[in-house]
Image (cartoon, rainbow, N blue to C red; front, side, top):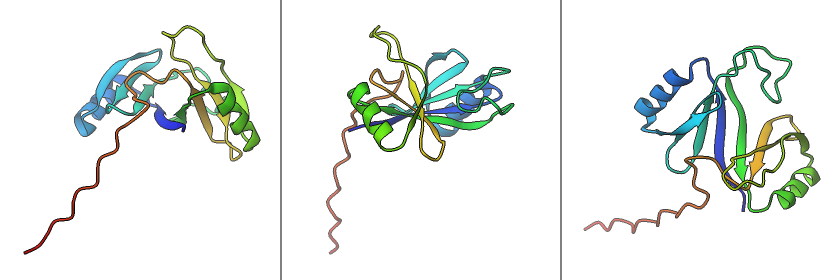
Amino acid sequence: MEKLRHIALSVSDPEAAATFFEQAFGMTRAGRAMRGWYMTDGVMNVALLNFKDEAVPGYEKLKDVRGVIHFGMWVDNLEEAEKKVIAAGGTYLTGRKETDPNVFYEVKYRTPDGIVFDITESGWKGAVKHVQPVEEAEPQKTA
């Protein structure tokens, strides 16, 4: 099953945003991103990115985009996931699969409503694909 493990945010100051995520949510820095920082809570990866004057994929006609720019799904098989995305009405946007096992890559698509997302088999730094669910606690017995 595909897993939601990545959210990318466009921010004005990645360092200040990273400090906020550390102080407000207890997240840690998983590593440097090309345009900022990758943060993690141990399961999810949040990319804090500043695109400056670059076009943001999926938002090329907009200037100074801030907020959620895409979400990412960690899949078992990129080719099979792509078939499902296209069959469900999604459209290819950009990117390609990388064969180097040390490279994190994303292939971007749009939902039928135009929401940008990506899929990958390699995951994201700081994200964990499979999470052990918390067992249901036994109901408290009252005397």
